[in-house]
Length: 550
Image (tube, rainbow, N blue to C red; front, top):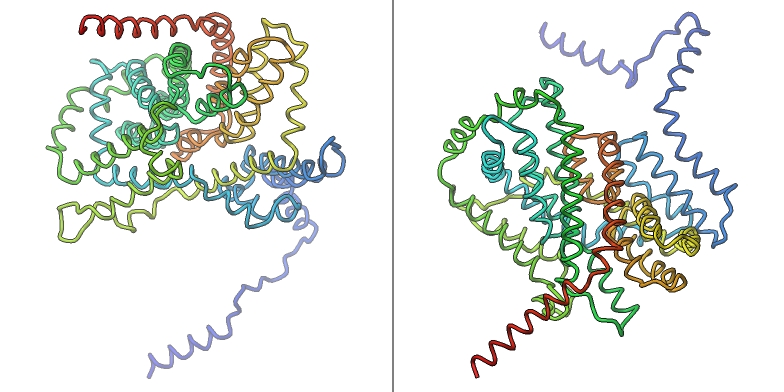
């Protein structure tokens, strides 16, 4: 009875308890008001107000010689980028703002904006990350990280040599694969190295800097490697495709013609990046600080402890290899269209990525009956914040192109017609590399600027490729903001770097890239005879072979 009575009294007390606590009036009303004002007038709240205020100012006072929607589009860009840069609200939450800002400002319908959040590149990220989760589930990334670290760490540990080996590995992979795919695939290798080190709150300054350097290496070596080959990045293909359509009577740019220019440019920029990252993030004594965690004998023991590769690991690597082969052979060159032509060009890299990702849910892992390599529960860690990032970037890019703002941007660079020829490449590279920071999509930037550069080259009476190629390559120099390109977002999602790291490395690296383009375009870029000689050598060899066989 006592228990029942106690229970009833508790229930009765609960029924009397209000949903929200009622506080007694506090003494000192004036003190309470001043405290609330201090609470409101904080720097964080100022950043929150900054975005809408910038948008309102632009819509009311900034006049553009363009349709009214372009002015509203500029206001939306100011709002979103203000919140992105200041992180007034979480970055993924800011990325959802175009979903309501575009319809409210009359820029685009809700349906059309929502379509931007499921682009082929986004499906590429989805499939790639499912594969990355499989790599992590079966510790394949740990095995790869141990092998790469063991190969390049040196004895004793040499952090600079290890970063150089990581740079070279990512550079080579990026020569043949899409930048996003390379970043997604190589980031587990980088995080595998970082996971060997203590947690962030236990790290010394030298170890913390090295962790940041490893992540930044993936972020920046990826776009640098993509410069090397014609198929290294979508921007290169856009340049070639536009050159063919704008100047159909000209000889198309072949794979080896691009390689003889792009590869030296990329190698020089990579070496400069390695020097920058070592100067900023590898202080003296880093080797001693890292030796306790990256010692060769420890690495060998850890690698042996993993044992031989299990069936599941082999299958994940096989699926990984299949994905690489399908990506590399979907579209090769104009003369060798690849297997994608069998489907009339309807299949994209995202389609391949999702298709191969689905195989992981079909192939058994041979550990338990009925268990597959991946289950949907394993996919709860998919980076939806990254998807929102990309969706916002594509929505903004579409808004810029469709609402007349692109014409305003194109008029900004009309002054290039009066620029001295020797400084033209430098100015073009500088402008393109800055514009690409804000349009988010390198491909969208190249699509916008390449026809404009072709027109300006005609008015300046110079060969169009002198402007188009360095301008197009410079759109890959999106080194400042985490939202400038998807590969930047992949590194930002790891949590091992901040925006200040991007500016610290990105500013000197952008300068280096522009200097390299400015030096090599008027020199190496004007020596197509190298590739012509190579082609003639091959023709001579074929001719001699025919004579001998006759």
